[in-house]
Length: 337
Image (cartoon, rainbow, N blue to C red; front, side, top):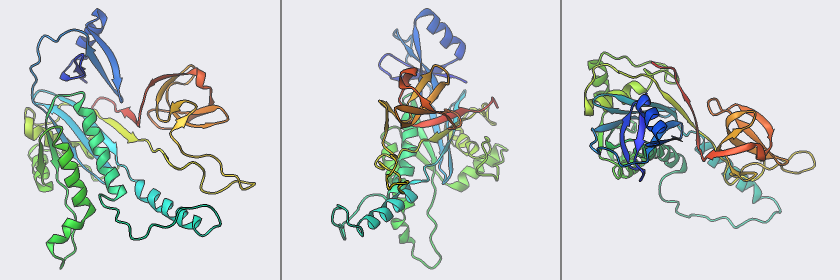
């Protein structure tokens, strides 16, 4: 697995091998750092050359899982399988129901705003495409990307309906919004689903029927052939190791539990701060090691595993936690493929 390289101005350069990165750090030419689960090096001296090779990112969108592959002609640098953001629709519905219930009680509340134009994208659709855009921005800060190759998904229309009803589909509007912002990072090339299948068949690759499986042939096989179609260089994948990413869910505006406990008191729930730490931040605990910050209770914080999300403890002292960096997702690296 190659190591991304940036200069002292955080501009991405061509990745290097782990052995060379270790020599740079040992001699003081570079400083190592982690960027959301990927180890990188920052050059402390002027690089010997700034010539870069074309690097493309293949993107395979999905409703539950999605894949991204960073590839040049010579190497496949990174394969990512990410979980999609799927909870926003239910959260908006819950918020609506709770707000309607409060208006029926004798409690202070604002007047109902009827017939107000929401405009823009639906919250659930926007959250899905924003998550893809965040991943692309993250990759663009580590690799000199020159092209995004995206499988263009289509909205399903009912038979007998006119074709123009696609213009009212949240899927069609959402992907157009995503393509517009993605083009500001690097040029975008679209491929249809049947074109992706042809590329996969030409390479002799088969796609797994299990869409939720954490294997290369589930989703990354499509993102790989999309990137390889632009830069070329391989007939079969040279690197099947994957980085699994799961976005963390934060209840930013919900301050208390929906249902009161005994005595009619609602326990605190939500917010993004836990005893001075931003939730999701990576910390190093004296006993638990690397973990991320969860909730808080009675002056203590909960710690969670970075790889599985399992809660490690609920009574960690803030003074025993050394802050490392802010974080908004958990990650796990698969064995070498």
